[in-house]
Image (cartoon, rainbow, N blue to C red; front, side):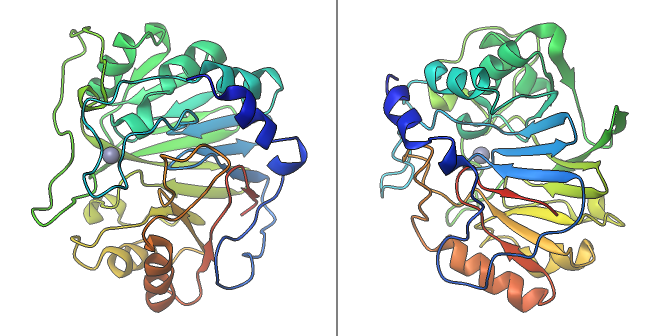
Length: 310
Ligand SMILES: [Zn+2]
């Protein structure tokens, strides 16, 4: 893709700073006092900054067109691409860095920029065996890839990462996982189109540091029993979940009604970074469910590159 220059033009230094609320709703959530800063990079791309450390979750800046939000749905034969010019711009200006990159599942809108970001940043990357197989085949440096199964609780310099077995969104009347499948680490044929990036299991991640914790789900489903006793300050919750029994109230009850619920995976990613648009009202549905289930929680909606301190 060769649209990096125009996209970069959209994001002058000034435009990147604002954390703004999109659409109707309550005033922007009141910031906390931790030394953690969250920045939303669109879709389920989150940057967790704790002092001088940066953890990225599902970073996907390229956002190529697939038709996901058309009646026909995503074209499975859409070629994979990485907008290196766009990514290089953020990295070279020091606006993006990474010590860890956490991958929730293998789909193109979560994983496809990670191999290049890993190579450029030197970050350690967590994912399942399938995710690592896909990323290695896409050129990620293999000595940076760390396999996870869910259940890990790991401490690094200044922050900790807890990994949970989780579930992908179940979509359509049959509650199916799109592009299902797995592959062994030994398989190295290069993925070419979006259906080659199979789900490969789904993980959730909690990052704790700087006096706060954030729990991220990359799909609108979860395993309740895995989350017993987990008490994050922020939960990043995807829109959707219509087929999941009591999707929002059951989760928030299990997590002890977190102070902040940050909407994620709600924007039309056929549009470039900088154009956060809710294609089908998912945000309003999520906001209403959160307000009904946990009225004391603050519902946080950021614009692309918006930041928030829990
Ligand atoms: Zn997915």
